Every structure is written in structure tokens, then in C-alpha cells.
Image (cartoon, rainbow, N blue to C red):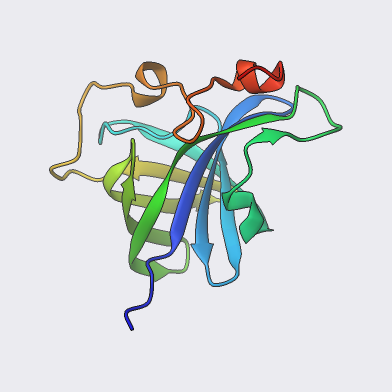
Length: 154
């Protein structure tokens, strides 16, 4: 039996500030980074990625409203799929995403304490000049915006 590829999810989360949560399954946890401006398919664009605490695998499936805190707490599954880890060493991850919106090779590199950079690597899935977060704002799971989830619509 061939083991399944690990899962990834990118959630759009209205918490203290609106941001994207990148979560990569590693065994029984989801390693997580907050990406304020969201991922990019343009290799020239570098995105800040702030590591946050590991989450349980249930975080890979959540779409709805978290109670408490600032913001609405609304979360949509902006993208999801599987990924293949290419390399992992201290302060650097390289992986290939197989999602609905995000495809191809990406890298996460630590650039300081609690500061990483997420970049799209140059490959056949790269789309220079394309702003995927602006062009494709809806949940891949429900087809809703985060505002519709916050309002309980849909």
C-alpha cells in the first residue's frame, strides 16, 4: 500500500487582522505559518510568513467562525490539496503543492526569529504578474467569501 501524500490547506482568516494561514501536515500535526498577504504564484514576489504554533489535523478541515478574539473569527478554506516534501533542513522547507489554486514548487526560508519568507519557485506552474489572492478570493470548499461565512450566509 502506497502511503497517502500529506495534506496542506491555506485558510483565509479574519482574526486580529485578515491573513492567510498556511498549514502543512507533518505526521499528526499541521505546521503553520501566518502569511499576511497570502501566497503568490509569481516567483518574483516574496511573502512574509510568520510561524505560529502547530495545530491539530482538524485545523486542515475547519471552515466557519471561531468564537472570541478580535475580528469576526471567520475562516474559509481558500485552497487545499496534497503536497510532496522536497527537502527539509534547519530554517528551510521546499515542497510541491497539488492544490486547486496553488500548484508547483514553493519554498519557506527562515530569515530571522519568527520571520520566514514564502516564495513560488520558477517552474511550469509559475504565473509571473498574476495575483492569485485578488483574482480567486472564494473558498475552494464552499464557494463563499470570508464575509459570507462571517455573516452566516450560504
